[in-house]
Length: 289
Image 1: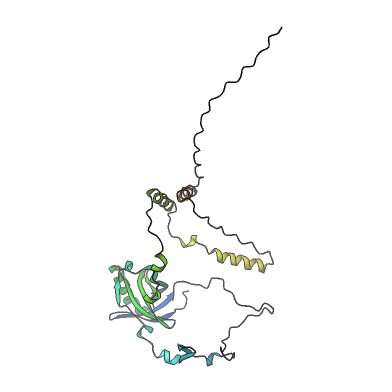
Image 2: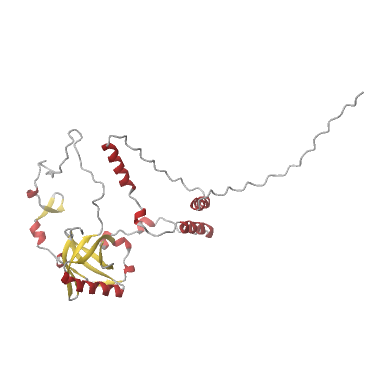
């Protein structure tokens, strides 16, 4: 059974529209989650909001949103006032433009959602929009209000439906220059690059998400099972600290050997100097008298 929709409304392309539902493409319910517990009583703790000045507990019906305009100076907004500012994108995903997929920088990608028709009447216009996008080999850009804020979404065909990926706004994405500007421009030798390329080639494969297990999650499950059964807590493997690279070529050669499943060839020792063998001293034979 498909999960409950995060959002329901209309997908719109010019004058063509259809009712659709938006479903989360990723689930986090399988992750290990914890509650805070009172160590002495074993009771679960409850989170409460406390007035920062009086120390009094503030109940939900007494809470209101506030925007800070100065030190300890807030403009308060009621939920009804915020709701009145609802945009068209609260109920409609209106595709504004189409662009080639490769033009969208990966750093802008955020969350993924499956977009599907919400009733049988929507099937035909939905398929028209989907197949037209597939034929044009373009992705659509639209806006939708999710979790109280308007998001940009990139829409693209996926199997029989559509995949909607929320995008970050320009102001949310940090400029990479401050992080990379101290990296020097180095001219590497062909031998170094060839060895590194060879290592990459030996590790070539296909993306298979099943090959990547959540080892931390598995470790937590093992820890919980052991404590529940009253068994000793399993010792966690100690992570190995990578050693500093002293000789890059030597490290690359060893890596190639490791990926090839063999020991690196030992460095040839310099040829030993030939030493002329001394003939053994002749023993004097004592003549018998």
